[in-house]
Structure formats: C-alpha cells, structure tokens
Image 1 (cartoon, rainbow, N blue to C red):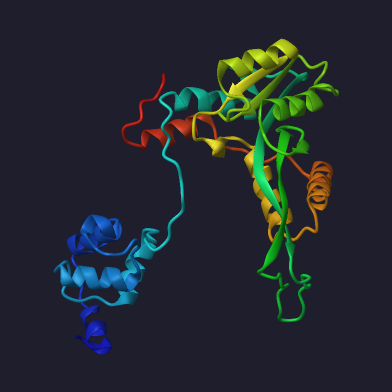
Image 2: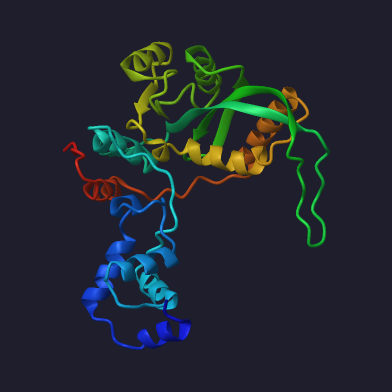
Length: 304
C-alpha cells in the first residue's frame, strides 16, 4: 500500500486528458453497473476503483476531488425523482406553463381570467409529544421529544390563486370527490371568481378530479370553470405544491399538536397569514424550457 507521501508525489505528474476523462467516467457510473456492493460512490471508493482497475497508477483524494469539482460531479449525493411517463407530457405541461405566464391558446388572459392551482395534502397527523417541547437557547437548538401520542389525522385541501398569492383551503376527514367539490364551491362562490370570465383550475390526476368526467362534472355546476390536468407524475408543475412545502417546513415540522382541532386551527391560521403576507411565486420555467428538458430524456415521445 502506498504512503500518503507516495500518492502526493504521483499527483505531481501530468495526467493525460484520456486518464482524467476515464476517471470521471467511473464517477458517473452507478456502483451496481460496475458490480460493486454499495449504492453510492465516495471519493475514497472512486480512488480505490480507478487504481484497482488500472485507470490510473496512483492518485490522491485531493486531486480526484478537484477533478470532480471542476465539472460539478458529486456522485455521493442523490435525490428522488419520477421519470416522465406521460406520452403527452409536452402537450399537457405546456398548457399549465402557459397559464402561469397568463396565456391560453396563444392569447393573453383577460383581467377577469384567474388561475387556481389546487391539490390535497393527505393524512396529516397530529402528534402530541410525551414531554413538552423546549425553546432554543444560547448554543442550543430547540428540543422536541422523540416519543409522541397519535391524536388523529386529517386531510388538507387547498386552492392557490397563482397570480394573486391567495390561498383558500379546508380540512376534512379524508379526500375524495365530495371534499374536493366543497373546496371548489368555497372558492367559486366568492368574488372575483363567481363573476369571472374564466377560472382555470390546475390539478393533478388524483381520483378526486381525474379525467374528462371531472371536467364535465365541475363545468356543469360552474360554467366559467375550466379544469386543466398536469401530466401524469408531474407534481413539480403544480404551484400549490410549493405552498405545501412551505406549510410542511413552517408548520408541520416538527409536529407537536395537542389535538386534531389544534392542528386544523394552526393550518388555517397559517393559510390566512400566508395570503396576507405572501407574494406570487417567481415562476420562470416556460414551455421552451420544458421542451429542452424532455429532449434530454431518452425514450419519451414528445407531442408536437
């Protein structure tokens, strides 16, 4: 085994571009593709593999890190995602993105047109900690007891006005066609939506509002309502999900509520506060950005 000083001397030589490229290629592989028994590379594992496989004779971890850093390669990191599977992803996604930029059928929206982004956040638990939470102090974070008692769970249904940054929501025992219908009524019964020319509701493909049947059901009750579905598995195109992520960070984490009623009151109070203080999200992603993104993905047909 080489000493640290040996590895340092080896790094003083000039590595040919082909060797540098080959090392980076290893870092861009999944370990399983190389039949290695771990899920993510570390700097040391990459160094060991490229030496064992004869890609380079020797290399230090510092040099290897510099090479990867130059190209923004961090193979030890990961994040979950869902591969786009909807064959009409481009077509459906473009409609949503155009609405965020106040366009429909290639024409600007009017003053009496509104865009609502809606969804449900299911099974939010009220967890009562078995010891009172303590506030932060000097050089000490706040503390929240690990053990808790379950006080029940609820569903939160929310509708976010994309261009006015207002949130309308209600809590229910569960989700479904009836609870979602109540949310729609709650919004559409008040101004300016009642007398609007058009109110576009952007939703995902959940069972509460899926398909043409949901479009016809809601349009029959509200003639100025147009339901617009995101592509399948495309929650990242639904702006209400941004609001839900803020709610999760600011209200629900950590979770310490004495009762289900306390949880509901807090959620609705935060909703009111957000509507008073919030500003529309600075959404810059366009249909052209979406096309460039999808072109990079293999085996995904794009609609014209």
